[in-house]
Length: 445
Ligand SMILES: [Fe+2]
Image 1 (tube, rainbow, N blue to C red):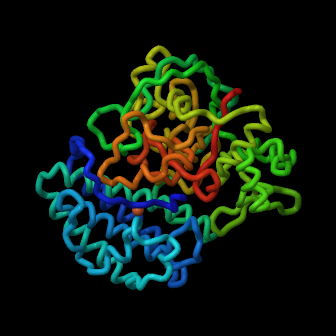
Image 2: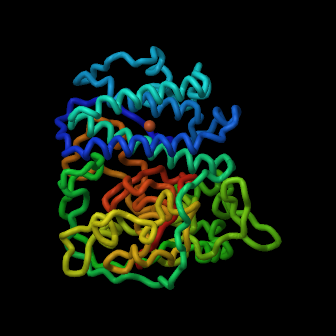
Image 3: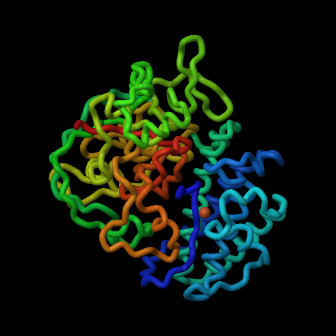
């Protein structure tokens, strides 16, 4: 089973505590911000791009846009308790847009409404949600926040789909990050100890897969201060890394043979120099930037070649969230508890792609690890699995269906919205996915 971009779920009867609501006006702002971003990402799509090619790793954009409205209506306007749902304002909404019920391969064949009608549906839903948010309702506030985050996650998916399909770079309104790189070589030496892995019960919104912080023992380890850059990964490629069977796991070799991979998917050679396609343009490979669009198998093979290994989730979180002498009191972000800003992390709105791995030293963790939040998602060694005592939240198909065969990524990318990410956030993809904005950092063996 493979999570294609994102999925959506049904109500469960599991006991569920609604966290303290974020102030309604803030949630309204989140919904509006997310919508503005969605509209910006789809504004230039041509008629044929609205449906696009049938690929397992993308959705037809016209379907995905309508799905955003369906999800918001389903969770904010149609809940009636238990599994019961009020009718949608569109009679055909469930038949078209329920991602749990409509098989991915069929989404190109649906009688989808035209873009205008689809956007009218989204606007009508959002208008009604805003009206309801004017009255205090903690449960609605929770689900509205869920919908804002859901739309932001789809916005990141729209963004990497534009890369997959070689479309123009997405529009970005914000100022460029001052991306002056500083040296960030070597490993951080971390003594280990007890870590409270997972999200603290601080009343803020978290997804079910982060619940709850629980003690785990972490042995002393050494983790790279920076992500692997293109210069380092090119050495692996040039050393025939993709052709040497001994560097690959069995599953990884099957993947490599299946697609005849000899280098990262968007790399190409021109006049003896490595170049990389970014959206619809090809540029010389930016050697100081993190290697990106590599899947878990490629990260794993690089580690064998370099005599390193991927960090476990617990090691990654230990390096990002703890501080020497204060291992049990975790930070929300590597630099502390203050919200992200462009001087600390390359998150959505900070630029138009990754920055060099040595940039943004102000965002270092207490152990000196750089860019653990932002720039590129980082593959970890671990399979996506529930924490002890896991109970699915109402949006039950967010996590549970994907336990087992997905790998965990941490930290967010340059296309991740700042208010969506934190040290405990767990993303997850199958190990063959190289379309997402993912790279990795390594640990000493
Ligand atoms: Fe979704």
